[in-house]
Structure formats: C-alpha cells, structure tokens
Amino acid sequence: MVPTSRELLGEIKKFVPPLLEKFHKGQAGRIAVVGGSEDYTGAPYFAALAATLLGADMAHIICERHAAQVIKTYSPNMMVHPYMRDSNSIVPASTTTKSIDKLLNDEVLAPIYSMLSRLHVIVVGPGLGRDKLMLEIATKVIERAKELGLHIVIDADGLFLVQQTPDVIRGYTKAVLTPNIVEFQRLCKALGVEVPEGFPEDPETAKKTCHELAKAFGGPVVLAKGRVDYISDGKFEFVCDMPGGKKRVGGQGDTLSGTLSTFLAWKHAYQSRIWDHDVSLDESSLMMLSAYGAAAITRYCSRAAFGKYGRAMLASNLSEMIGDAYNALLEDDKFRI
Image (cartoon, rainbow, N blue to C red; front, side, top):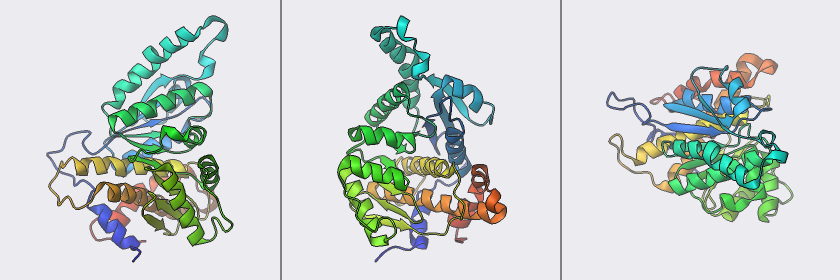
C-alpha cells in the first residue's frame, strides 16, 4: 500500500529534534552551502536561509571571494567564507601548474577541509556556476565530504558537475540529487537511462524512470522535481503530489535544497541519539523521508506564497512561509495541507 502524506509526515516527526534546554548550539544542524559565484549570489543565500528558517542551528556559505562581499550584505545571520576561486583569479602568464596546485591546497582547500570536519551536511551547487576551476574545487570538496561521511545535497550546477563525472557521487548512500525535469533528462543520458515516451506527464512512467535513474546511481536518493515530485533510492519510491503554487520562480529549488539539508542534519541528530527515542527508523527510510519532507515543505511554501502574492511572488516570499509550513505539516497534530 502506498503511504499517504499524513503517514509519511507522521514518520518524519519522529526524527525532528525536540527543543530541549540540554541541547547546545550546533547539535540540531551545522550545514554549509558550497556555491556562490560572481554572477550568482542569491541562490546560496536562499538555500542557507531556508536551512536556518526550518531549524538548522548554523548555516555557512562557502563561495567565491567576490560573491562573498555581496552575500555578506544580505543578512548577518549567515556565516560567509570567501574561500573559493574561479579561473579569473589565476593569471596564466605568471602562474605555473605547480603554483596553482599550491594555491588550491593552501588557500582554498585547506580552510574548506577544516570546516567540513565540523559540519553535518553540505549543499553543493546553488550559484556555483560552470567555471572550470570552481567545478574542480567542488569536486574535491565532494570527495572529502564522502571520506568524512557527511550528508550531501547536490542541486543546480552541482548536477552539471555530476552529469560530467557521475562517479563523483555514484554509490554514495548519504547523498540526495534534486534535478528539475531538464537536469533529470541530462542525468539519464549521462548514465544511459532511457527516458521513455510519456515522461513526465504519465505518473507511472515518471515514477519508473526516477527509480531507474536512482538504481543506476547505486546509492544516492533522486528527488525529481516537477508538477509532481518523484523520490527514489532505486529500491523504494515516494510521490509528493501536495499542491504547490502556480508561479515558477527562480530560487524555489534553493528553498528545497536548503530545507533538505536541515532534514538530513536532523537525521544525523536522530541517529546520534541526542534525545531519547525509539530508534524505529533505519538509514534508508531516513534518507527517503528527508527528501519527502523537503518536497512537502517547499510545496506548501510555494502555495502559501502564491496565495498571498499571486503573480508578484518572488523567491524571498517562499522563505517567509517556511515557519508556517513547518507548523502546518509537522507541529504536533495540526497537519494541514
């Protein structure tokens, strides 16, 4: 039997940390968004903001140095680290391969790696861009995060990176990929998964194709965004068909990736037993439920923001609704769709 939204959200409630006086800062989630380039500064901000508005204790943004100057002006609530470099930072005529490697290791990767050891989740992709050096740095960050056993969310240009080099995340079970329809089809092509006629309009075809892509990745959960969200780890499938808003705005995916990072951080807290509970949820269930929770929260935010602002809805309006979405879907027994 396919579980209902109410049943799935009931399961998600089990791993939402209670607010207890004994907790200290950081236990309910330390996340970082790896992205933010000179051209794209809003995406990492909206992702990090969504993570904190849902309930993560601490949100960092690791970005290109020029982007950092801009992002710092958006809000004092984010910790912004200007560690990344793009190709424009390197002067070819005066820079040797050896000196570039030293720059990457000493000035870029060393401080990022130091941060990773203190985190629970990273979100790779929002505002990353497609600069060759930025993608190279992001690849190395993903590899180190895997070594540390961190949860990884990959979105936006992080998915472009995966499309080029699928092995960077293939087989890693603590990752969630969040492609839109176009990104999904490109990933299918990269992994040799057929996209049949009827995708994505036919529900069974869409669900099966999501299953096949997740199966081809052999570990990560795939959250395929669209009119209906399909979620699969290659073994099981969830479908999130809660109503959303009717306007599509840039930044909606950043809200999803940010809230997803918080659910994954809560998963870590649950598995670390920082409060007493029945330990009834296993690893694969927690990964799938985290993805479903993010999809449900984002859809509620979209619908609520559209209901208030209509055609004037902006990405920032979704952020306003995250607290209401949590209360409506996950607070006690107030479940309201």
